[in-house]
Length: 517
Ligand SMILES: *Cc1c(COP(=O)(O)O)cnc(C)c1O
Image (tube, rainbow, N blue to C red; front, side, top):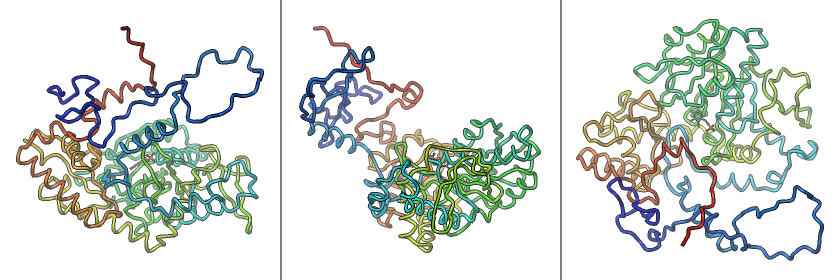
């Protein structure tokens, strides 16, 4: 039973289609309650003997009440987690065109490598002499990254893109402090089209963020940077290719404006997938750039991690890199720690970073080779342009129908007068079995739809995706608002109040009071 807003009329009818079922299941798609709702304290999946008489030594610290963990049998546990996993849309189940996220296939070879006992079972506290192979792998990966970026050093420990931003900006801060300019260089320039993490990173370590307006063509213009540059500017944080899917064509000039003013150039390299093997960020004048191994180099991501965000550093910033880093002394490798004669700003994390991700990324690089990595970038750009070209007659392109890099950006001008929004269009894609594209980002474009197909899709998969979007677009333009306004009609849950969920998240399950009868 649905009310006029398309919401279930009662909690029991958490049903999603017009047709209610007795179980609330939809065909073979199972409803699944929280484990705390189905579990019972007295049930267990293991059968251990009661311990022989023992005396607790906890004294007054002993727990007085049951801990309240849910108990389930083994088959119940299996079904619970398998059903939950089936609710997850993943790159392993279908095309995932989420712009700026580079949702590419994760080759299974990488998984096999990461599970080799010598990599999977090492412990960060093992004596360094017993993990020389693991250190060599981290060092090899760092070298590949330095070659691909054309930089002098790479900090391997950051554990996500945003963490890498923090690392790079802390290195910049340390370099500024070392020059005695810490009190004056307080401003970080961030283009309006930046990922939200950029201004957040700068602000979180005490910089004042100033927005650089984007040009009408979606690029950052040197004059806009010149207008803001001064002795108070510490750095710029620029994304290249930018979040409009465009190469920042004036990046070299922007770099020299920064450098001439004594400031540093941070580049958000999350979109490195578009230029690997084609352009080296070091040659473009960048001083620091994080690389999302979990985007460009195919290590899995989503759902909060684990990620890895190594940061390539120029010669000017290399001395300030975080510890620990690897030193090669003949055949022996060792980790350099704080206080060992470095100007390091300190440590980003316990230990050395995400070992499993390092193995996967190096496996990806070695199996592709230099030519394969270059081809992956070319194919990613080709695929995005194919999508752009095949949709350009129906959907509007904010910066004209010109070539893009790895992602194609549409706006909502074409939906004007249809009563259908970007959100509606994205929700209707779910009914067709596609994860929506990135919506309403970048903010510089009204009703943005940012599509990044990546290189891992076949021509057939791209054609089906394009035909689906064309069918939806034609339907929108014909005024078939109903297909969109209530979408998704076929998903396990329909339109949720995402704002309320974000503003007032309920993060803890509390046991409901027993119902009185
Ligand atoms: C993904 C992304 C980030 C942040 O990376 P995380 O690993 O999610 O922290 C930063 N900038 C851009 C442009 C991105 O696409």
